[in-house]
Length: 451
Image (cartoon, rainbow, N blue to C red; front, side):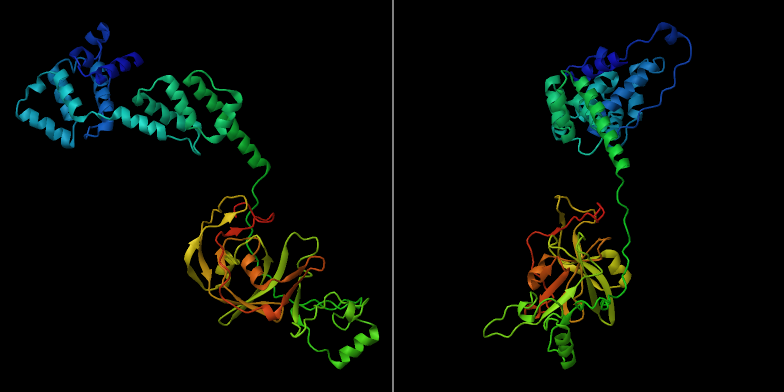
């Protein structure tokens, strides 16, 4: 069958096609003279698609060769092929029948007329161009090889050119392996080697996936409202979240004096002039009253992230969630499911932007297209700000305070004592943060890989 197809292709590509080239080979005499002819499904009807012309003619030739007694005359062959035409080819052939055109007198002349009308004159050029653009990408190498072989038949390239083009379209992983193992001398051996290497790569990838399963996505939970910690029995006065240092009452002043406590921070072991938490005095300007926000009970000195309680207010609604302070995030973010659960109003962003993770990839959630309305944000009891949050999937941290927020307020973070200090004189509520040219989001160890 392969020899027959090669002879047929040689006959179809020849400009001077003869009758002997288009006639099927003679079957054995015993099958031709006796016994029923084998059943052959008729070819699919031809509608004039130049890409399908050669397949259509080859199918007709197979039918003629297997049912030689039925198609033993040129009349039967020509009329049978005409019956398989539809659309424009059918109208062309019917016109030949009505005008008794001499092209219909023999199969060879009719075939030459069809070839001139419907064979693709740019078949070789188109195949070569498609072959040059063919890439494996993320597909299995078997699919790439199948497409490559189909185009190689039409391109009429020699084997060295096909080997070079085949290697050019492989994935980067296979190119690296071929550079290490070496390239075989023939195209078939190169394809077989690539199949073996690609199979081993996929098996190894499956082994790694089973050994290190992906972290399951956790639904965010809304924490209870944050409550300041109560004084400990040891007598050490903990710092109050968001408490501004104003003038002390006479009773408090007397208590600190009798216990030998600092008149500024209320701790023992030093006096007010030695207090490290007291800001330097500025001549000619009033001292700023800093607001201290302690995150004790939420983030310990050994924690890998800095978490603060965040109170959100909009319309008549108020809720408290935990927010991570992240200098690796360019903006402030809220989790998508938190938005849906709490019913926080949102609006489309005027200019959506893509998120780029620290490893250079983009998350599966796509670009940021929505943001919240201006929300009144309270940290502790007195420090307030008005923020717009961009909405992204963040199942581990419901909220993120990013670099634009840090730059605007420039808080002092004491990592040893786990406190965040704001200078109230520098904090002015605003609904617009600093716009960065490149938006990034941190890839933390506790965040699932999908995000």
